[in-house]
Image: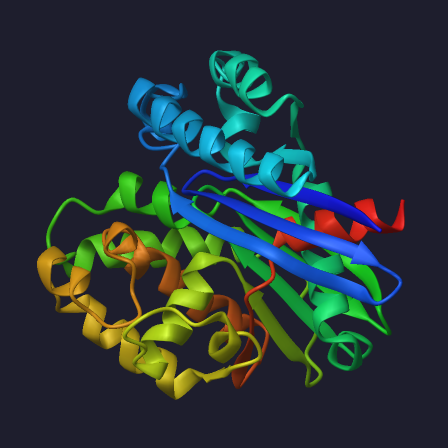
Length: 303
């Protein structure tokens, strides 16, 4: 029996999973997700802002205490914001001291591989067929095209809900020209992805996808048991996009299923999801609540 804590330090959200691995399988001991916005403003000067660094370090201190209470070894990874920021060491050095372990800044292809591993273990029957797996984050989107359980294509695109919002949206609600700028950038990035033309399953993970599923379900409080495995139809997704498009910030913050801290960036994330679904010829999205922190857990458990 071994206890592991995996931490995903993302552009928008910092997540924790603590689990016990034994011959009986995996038992979840604790899960946390906090929107810390480490990458807020990174598009302006390329650097991490002091408020985002301090928020994220404070959450990491909480996570380290949780892991210690369970006697779990910590494994932490960082993604797009830490890949890009020239001042990443200003965060990484104190983070390592807090956690007692380094935060490994992983390449986009490895992030995609962990995303696929989590999806394949969550939905093995589905992942064994033709599938596209996506992880829409704050700073990047990972896309994996797989067949027969093997990755044929994997790429991390610089498309994220936070980045797109900061680059293009100034109005509240976003005006048509701003939305067009968002969708045009998404379309340009997706041109490089070889989506299959045959029927497939689209599996979506991370906060944008799970939030839209929770909104479609009308959840007063987030319930991973209801979200994980939910099939979000394109019709239901379009309903949420239409609501978001005409809503002001305060109205979005009050929407059931949506974390108020995600209300300013959810529209851009929803458009990423919609355009990927269209490009992949999917009629629905199979929603996964298990992102790269789960992929990292599976990897470390196997090792």
